[in-house]
Amino acid sequence: MGNKFCKKCGACCKHIIIDKERKIICWDAELPLTEEFEAMLFPADEENNIYACRFLVNNLCTNPNRPEVCINYPSFPFVQLPENCGYEGYIFVQKEKLKHKIRKLKEEILHYTVLSETTNDKRERQQYQKIINTHVRYIDKYKNYGSDNW
Ligand code: SF4
Ligand code: SF4
Image 1 (tube, helix red, strand yellow):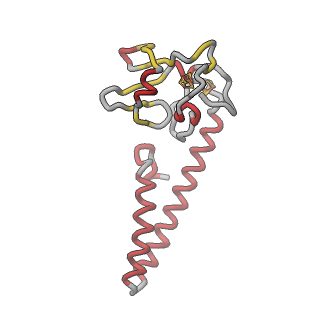
Image 2: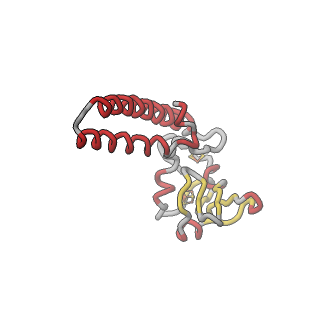
Image 3: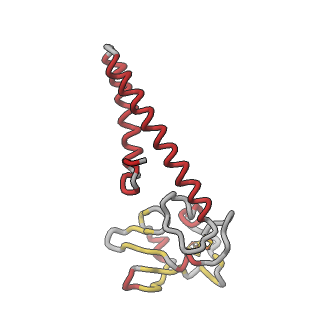
């Protein structure tokens, strides 16, 4: 549950999707399901793997030791926010910033590709390739969200 733009509706803490087989929380980004986090939950709609947090009282968090994932929520640009969440605008901006960053990385990849193709220095070429590989790995992290087309 966030703070800055939070409307204190409590919806995010009543709709936490858990993939028990993969031990994953599909809540903000997909994150590992820790024992600490699992212990806070009770089934809200078990058939659909939806859980709620027992620390939510009157739509407010009463956990004095909120796990990091709660403190940071929502942080992932492709988080599935509950309807009318106060963070909609903020997350939209984060998404646009990420797309902008990835477009810049693609430009840099082109730049380093040209440099790599025009130098005769093997070490330089390897350095350029290293940068390109790091950029490609970063872009690929968002492949499932369409980063190939940004
Ligand atoms: S769904 Fe959004 S507005 Fe509602 S409690 Fe969670 S972070 Fe706050
Ligand atoms: S600990 Fe608090 S913020 Fe985290 S899921 Fe539970 S009620 Fe929400």
